[in-house]
Length: 239
Image 1 (cartoon, rainbow, N blue to C red):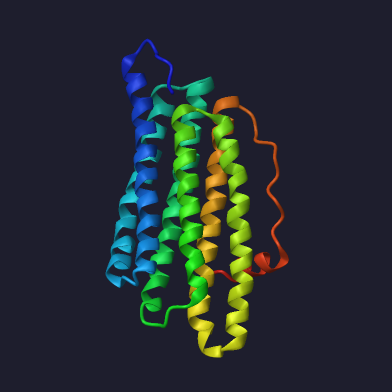
Image 2 (cartoon, rainbow, N blue to C red; image 1 turned 90 degrees about the horizontal axis):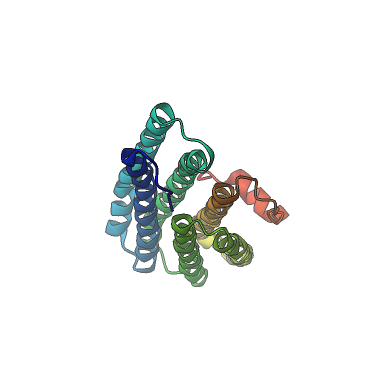
């Protein structure tokens, strides 16, 4: 939602920046959706496509950086306009990381297509679809400058964290019962961690939208991570 300026080209440039963010968000959401479908359908070919498609999101991230630098250098934006440029830079970085996590999921799906299907894996699509819903809502909040909606999305991340901790414990039980499950369970465990981190990046976007709208810092604190979650984060090669 951009106010009109005397120079129409300035409005067009700001709108183009926002449109690039929206395009990037759509592709990122598609990456996550594809990674989930590849896992559910045990589709290695689709997983390879998800890995290849990550380059387009990296290109859009670079485009956002370029557009933002041009706006800062040539237009010297102030107040809401300046916050809009800064927000775009921060949001594009978060979207790029979410896409990277979706790519990591696809990489881990490939070896899982060659193993027996495990019961706990059904939690991964549920977690992923919850994060996809959060992404849709947070981008709507970005487009409309709706900080209240962004706050609602921020709180929804608690459910993602709860699902992750529950799956973490279930997978540990599976691995202790049968050592042959350790390798596939480890892949599923890190996929769950990828999705949990996506949720954290969505909450970053929520906080950025609050800054964009109000010009100050989001004041609520994230819930503390569990001890087991901190341990897993420290050993996660995909973080």
